[in-house]
Amino acid sequence: MDERIKKLRQKIDKIDTKIINLLDARAEIAKKIYEIKRQSNMTSFDPFREDEKIKFVEQNIKFFPKSSAKHIFVEIFSGTRKLYEDIKVGFLGPEGSFSWEAALKVFGQSCIFLPLTNIEDIFEATEKFLCNYGVVPLENSRDGIVGETLDLLVEKEVKIVYEISIPVSFSLLSKSDDISKIKRVYSHQKAIAQCSRWIRENLKSAEVIYTSSTSEGARLASEDPEGSAISPERLAQKYNLKILFSNIQDTYGERTEFIVIRKEKDEYDKEYKEGYKKVDKAALKDKKTLNKRQYFDLNRIFFGKSSDIREAFCFSIKDEPGALYRVLEPLAQNRINMKKIHSRPDKITKRYNFFVEIERKHGDDKKIQSAFEKISKNITFFKTLGVYAFRKD
Image (cartoon, rainbow, N blue to C red):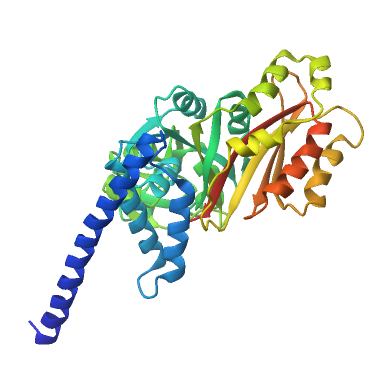
């Protein structure tokens, strides 16, 4: 061996020893923090703190790839949390799905992942404490908002604690290394739709077979010598498939936003939800102001240095001219940036619920409180959906 390589490797060995010792030292300190949290009945997952640290890593790493460094730290957080508790995370299964990828990027591998068959199952499992957290899709840049998720955010006693945006891309996977020999394409209906142009141009005569998920498509392709799957590239290794073509989706730059939900309830929401369920118009008319002071006292959160903080809430309004304008005007008056607004018909009242996500900067408490006090005078229903960090992966 070249003597120069030998000397450099000896230096790396010393650095690796330091890294191992520092990981143990970090774990000892974290264990003490978790003991304090246990006494205060606090959860081990602190999304604002972890988001702050991830952004710190991205900003300060110099030579090592930023994405790799970020994922290493996610795993450090995950392994450290395991010293305190085994976190159960429900996601839209099976393993290998985009929901699974989002869950992995937020929580790391040192968790218990529970694959569930539909979005409602995730909400119910979270609400009933069958899992500590749930990961559900919120919006896709191509297909738009996931209406079922919005409906369940109103119905269930959960809060959003984190939001992550991940890129969506598909590859053609197969046991064969010759595209001309492929006679069948397996995948989920949405993945087929997202790659329809590529399929028409490159696999005109192949039979398209819809599956329950892209993961199931990859599994079936692994058992079919003349089959292929349109799936995320990461499934190639799991099912021992060759990657024939990458990034075959029709639209580049596509992303999906996922939210992390947790069981949480406060009296502020309860007052309005009970009135809303009864659809008591007289009672709703009497509730002209919301006790925002109590809300902010109960929900003060230390954001650390998280740079992208958001707050979501939903409301319904009277069916009259200018009603929506009067609700949104206080946001503009207080220079609060609205990131999203969506509407959904309500299952009970048959009116529309509006879902709003706003940008929340450090020191914005008073501005948001002022806006919400004005908003409260023009609504018939209101529910806070959470204050959380947003990360674009």
